[in-house]
Length: 169
Length: 304
Image 1 (spheres, helix red, strand yellow):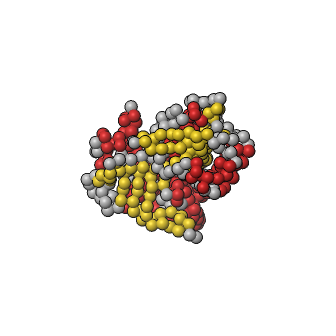
Image 2 (cartoon, chains in turn orange, cyan):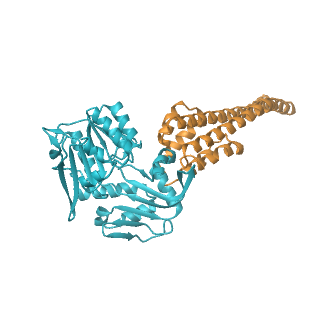
Image 3 (cartoon, helix red, strand yellow):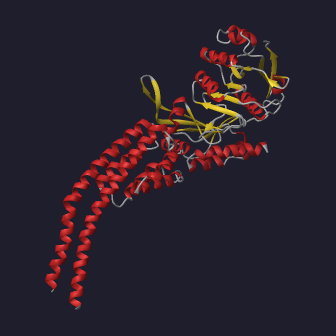
């Protein structure tokens, strides 16, 4: 009985790991899509009437989702502490603290820190459009990877668990 | 009270300085805080204060390019794009109406200045109002309690803008005359100093401000959009400004304006200003004269 329960736990744990890995691939895709969408909105709002960053973020936060909302809220908070931390450094910190962004995803966002709040709006808009486009491409790659690897991780989790159960029993 | 207000203005202006520089500027005496006119930042030089009796260098590390970048970031709220037009005009206005003039390498596009890079120096000018500047003047500009079109005339640096601002405030508040709706074309933001839509210098409750727009266009926009009873403009400098004022007079609007010049004869000699007198666009002329440390305002009837 104990061996059976142990085997079941191992099978469930292994399946959970597989499904978790597949789920992370999905979450990463969503994060990239949310950020791409957020930056595109930011570029549009900027083009509309070039509001100060504080107002721009106030407008963006309510309609943003997930990672974009977190990033914008972090930026809004950073504006209150510009004396202690320049905006470019705060942006870098916020981007690097997003757990679902890999190096490629971060590379799309990090250059914006040197542009946002420091250049004319046209340059900012170009940089935002460029970053959004790169994030969409990354999201496309992440989608493909999820389709390709998601099933693999799920099957690996299930079959790995089954294999261990067979070994144990 | 006036002294406290001067110190408050000084400390408010310092909020845009990077913290180490602010601490240094706050370490000066109370008298210097009251009298300081400007704070100067030059890369490679220590911070300095411009006082009525000269420039004083404050001890400490020299100002760096990073300090100037942080100054712009703090002054713009990390929103250079929102103040880029102001910077192109040579300065940016911050809360309290204080202004920051910037110097560096100009970025040109098609011969026009697009911005500045490698900032080399900054001049933080402390805004201090003189709310009583127009005391005793407005009454002399009114006929039966109603303001007549007035031109303020003086050479640069004698306080034309200060007087214009105080007259606008008084007319708008109805202090010394019947209260009227005033529309102000403030091309360079020197009269009202708008900051996020709020005048930082007192221009009265019935005053509408159009900032950053060429004067002639601003006057016409205000005339069409805001239905003003008084149209105010600082420094008539171009024939288009005169044409816009002519249109306003045709619409029955009272004018409050300033111009560079010494006296009526000086105006008549200059082609730009001659129509203002010949066409009777203004009924009153205020000349500002320096008298010792103070100013004297002479009001002259121009007729109709």
